[in-house]
Length: 84
Image (cartoon, rainbow, N blue to C red; front, side, top):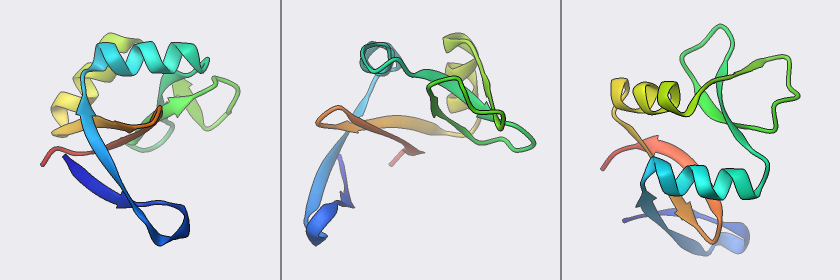
């Protein structure tokens, strides 16, 4: 578990989640995994951004694995970060 600053300077606890859990949260929010064009950055997107190419969940998992990244969540808010 890791902490990151939130509004008001308070810390909120971020918990590592599986890609399947991230997918469930993302689908509830109409989000898809995306690759930032011209970079190796990945993020969640609504799919209507010219700078982000929507990718499959399998490709998303591969990108996480390649870069030793994981999805962390707190209260439905997700962030892609380096694994601890």
